[in-house]
Image 1 (cartoon, rainbow, N blue to C red):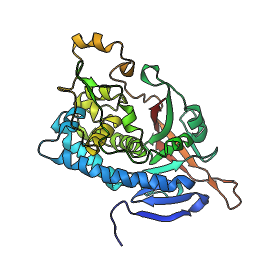
Image 2: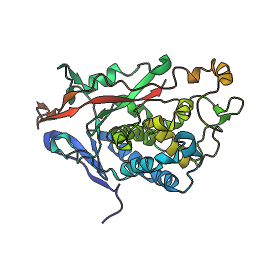
Image 3: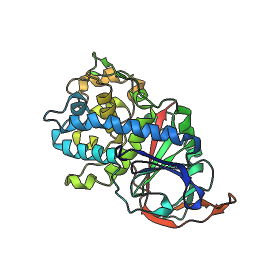
Image 4: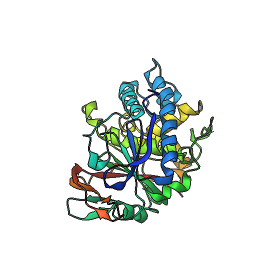
Length: 335
C-alpha cells in the first residue's frame, strides 16, 4: 500500500549489518536512535507536510511576504522550490551504500557512545563524532553567544549526526499554529533574534538537510555562484542579499516556519541597515556580530568516514571506509 513518499517503513527498527537499528521515513534513514526513533520519524513526517505550503508559495506567480523577506528576488524561486521539493521527497544525491546505512538520501545517525562513527581528516587526525558532540556542547558562534550543538551535517556525505543533547528538546516536536515573530516598528525589524521560533525538531532537521542539498547544488546557479554562509539571527537573515540568502540554511527554515504559521507581519523593505539606524541597533544584544559570516572551508579535503559496527556480542566490528570530501556544519541553538 502506497501512502506517500514519507511512509514509515518501521521494520521498526530492524538491525542491518553490524547491528545498528534502522528505520525509514520515505527515503531517509534513521540509524541507531533507539527509543528516540519514533520521535525522529514523527518530526520528519511533520516536516514533510509543512513543506508543501512553502513549495506552493514559492511556485506561485507572486510569492508572499515570507519569500520576499528571506529570499527577496524571484530569480531564485525555481532554485528554492527545487531544494524544498527535493527535501520533501528525500531525493537521493549520493551513491547508495549498505555500509553507511544510506540509500543515497540523507541519513540521521544518532551517536550514543564512543567509537560508533569516526571521521578521518586529511591530517590523519581521527575524530570520534560522539566525542565531538560532547566537546561542542557549549561553543560560541558569531558575536560570542553560548550555544549548544545539537546536530551536525557532514557535508559531502549523507550523514546528519544527532548529538545526545538534542533529546533534551524532544518534547518540542510540533510547532504551535500561528507561532509568529513580532515587529519592532521603530527600527523596522523583528524583535529579538527569532531563534526560539526554530527550536522545534522539524525545523532543526530542516536546517541540517538544507545544508546537504544546498552545498551539493549551489554551483548550478552559475556565476556569480552564491556563497554558503551561516547566519542564525532572523534580522541578519533578513539583511542577507538574495545571492547569499539561497546559501544560508536558516533562511529556508524561517521561510518555511512563517508559511506554516500563516504569518503576515514582516519588516518593510528588508535589506541592509541604513546608517541612521545603526546607532539604534548598536545596543541590541540579540543582533551583534557581522552581518555576513562565511563558512570556513579550511577543513575541506578528502577524508574517510568509518561506521564502526557491532557484532553479535556487542563488541566493535570494523566497517568499510567511505572516501568523501568532508566539511562539518553545526546545528546550534542559543542557551
